[in-house]
Image (cartoon, rainbow, N blue to C red; front, side, top):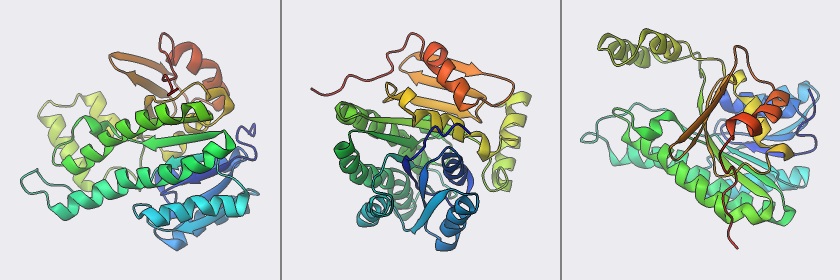
Length: 298
């Protein structure tokens, strides 16, 4: 490893499992001091222990970031234990079965919006004050292809779409303070891959002609969570200081797209990108022809 994040302090919400866990481990390998987070204390502690057992530095924090004051305590935990807060990855979320709009309950709607959207607001709200004083910070939000609409999931789609507005607004507001804010949509397996319900739905879409065979097989066999961290790590380096307010789609770390209004650039390779390759390729190819940094407030 190249210590791309040496001495940086990172909080990854929802880092007890899946992609969040992979990001926490990946950042620790690059030298970051990490605060893991999950609503299950044993799970959060297990990931922190995994990091320390490998020679890294980490502590755990158990708490629901959809609660405003708990999110504040989580941010403060980084400062109290490591002296600063440099990186916030808003990864915490829930995956619950949905219903069509005419059957969606208020409770299901409120819970989904609260965890995904309000939780990201809560953590960002408290993190920015700390980062402004330092004059440096990286905020990464997590959206989904579902932001464009997902059958029987209006609550999830709305929460994920809302994160684009949050990201771009925060990027505008904090740009003068050395802070960037970006959002990405990951495609990777979690908890062993698609659920049985998802597999049935994919099969129905394939049979009805909504999915090609290639796309069906890709969705049925997503890449592992460990393939995601390199690009997230890249966005948290000094080399990515001019990238803010952007929307990225990441399938593993071998196919990356950037979305900006009607512009869509991509980079891809047969294997997985390394951080070193991303440092070289992103500015020259992925951001080619795109003003990567939003105009900041005066």
